[in-house]
Length: 190
Image (cartoon, rainbow, N blue to C red):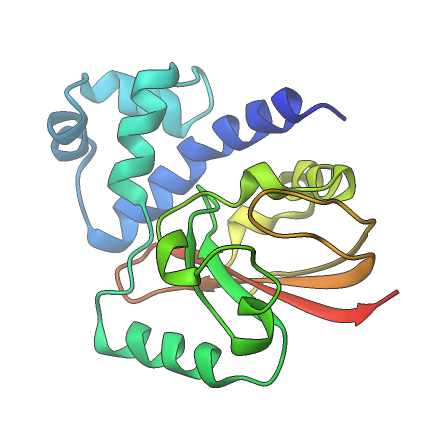
């Protein structure tokens, strides 16, 4: 499956994610429409999947929904990840922007991890990771926090990180602000 097809699937899930984000905050569609400078009807159509945001609208939505580790509880989660002996990292579930990683994972990166904060790791995805991403909506990933997905990936060398052949686990976590993060864990190296 091509990356642009995956990107299309990710764009289609933005409406569902926007609805969840708005519901958690108890924001009305009219308020979100004001924030995004669109009509309430447009927000409704995005959330119901009748229309897909264009690239500028998608960027505005992603910026609005971007995962941040602002709350003390979220920062404690980050501290636990950083001190873990497991090879894992946390990214924004929607944008794949890097948030934090463990020391074993940081050794896999070609750049300092503090330079990566906010950088999308999607560019590093192997073909198998792209295929796994394409399956998420069909398995109900976006419907519930705590969803877990196990997969396998082959090797892929990249400018940020080299992916080794391995089994991985994704866990969808809801943060205190209602946004979702994805915990990415290497289960076993092949």
